[in-house]
Length: 287
Ligand code: PMP
Image (cartoon, rainbow, N blue to C red; front, side, top):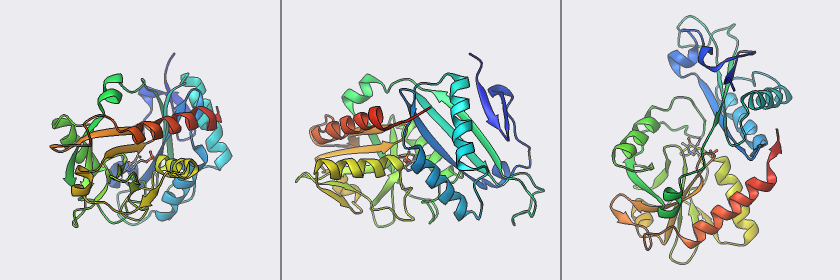
């Protein structure tokens, strides 16, 4: 099946999708994005992702490039055209094309691009063994709550992780507290069974998976603390895990040279992963 992309109002063959060299996304990273999971032919948390897109755009003084129903329609059409049943849809909005000048252009039209990707299930080995993470200094700006396409620090962190044979890099602020992964939110389970993740603020991206998992944790009656935790606390935690639209709930069994818990994916992490899987199986929006 030929793969297509949606580029500025048209469906085009994926390998021919192109934007102008003076698109402000290309020159200034002047844009934002979203990634929505497609699970078993349904979109997971589409509404919250579109809410966050609108919020990110607002922070850039931009409006949604199309009405919400139109975006939903195009997303579904693209997913259908590409025959994706499990994977992701990527949506990117930039301020559009204008002669290079830092200040906002008066007349640029926002550029909207959507692509889809069919993904394979997570590797059985990764799930059985848990993920390894390394720690890196958080060198990002103070608006990490905006889902900006400016991802250089995140890319450098992920590359460092890959070179260390790790799945993810946890970014650590100047106070020694973990902010989040390069593309995931970070969680630990304390010795007395409390689930801990950093509170939403400008220091992290408020993950949609994080948000949903918080609701599931509360519904199941587990104890939750939204607070910062240090790298040191994480290394001696009973369990650790990460969340994102692409990783779901993924146990972490090693942080730098420290083994987390007994070195196997934690019991509670496993339960939360199952709760999240059940949620995806039942709460998706049909395509
Ligand atoms: N933090 C960062 C920096 C991210 O890039 C992502 C994934 N986009 C997340 C957290 C997780 O967010 P979500 O659960 O919405 O995918």
